Image 1 (cartoon, rainbow, N blue to C red):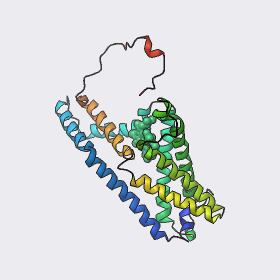
Image 2: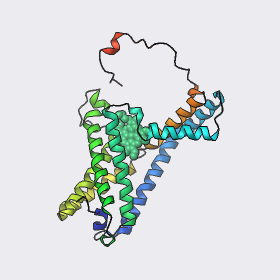
Image 3: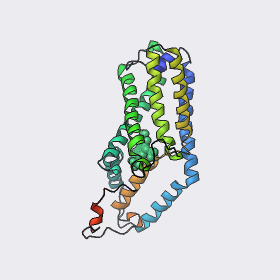
Image 4: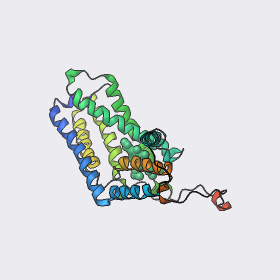
Length: 264
Ligand code: HEM
């Protein structure tokens, strides 16, 4: 199964050009959804207004090489490792989901566009990474969904309680799960189950990429932007118009030791 390129096999039923058009449509949906979200929330407008205001408060002007250094450090130390999630389970689950999804998407595009037919002999590296990426997404995503979600972990809501904010994580894990099931039944030549999971895979993709405007999908673009801006503001001394931290020992009283903080 891990050496199976399900898209190439599918081309016997659905010509690869339709699969390629579907993929391009999904990418367009992400662009449209994110743009509408930006217009609706006005977050990018606020972001630039804030950056401009902060620039006026800057204590020093960073040259291009200093800015590049700050940006590279933010990418390597914060964005690629999602360090803002601390050192615990939350970060491991996120890294599994994030890198799993990246692997899954990149190898999907490679297989759909470069190895669309069974005669093309897809290198096993791509088929293997596609399945591993989907498995990692499921592992990180279900771990988060069942155990780590704030409303489950801290607010004692049952795991099956659904709210709009769950659209992203649910669509993401379901897409990866249906992809694995589709590939599995295709490999076993169970045609009916293969078609059922293919259909579910397509529908979950439409929810995932078509739901960007209503879901948390766009955080993967906003978070890196905000981290870079925060570190640039730190480096030029403007500190987002916030005061410097007091140079005093932390005094929270003994109460803070009673329970690990988890009531967000
Ligand atoms: C392909 C890229 C990414 C994927 C698939 C992904 C996936 C996810 C998922 C499924 C969630 C849970 C959403 C929820 O609360 O329901 C999440 C939350 C989060 N993500 Fe990402 N993410 C990606 C990129 C990033 C990046 C680049 C950053 C930061 C630089 C980031 C930071 C966060 C943070 C801080 C949370 C909140 C975590 C929590 O509540 O425990 N993510 N992400």
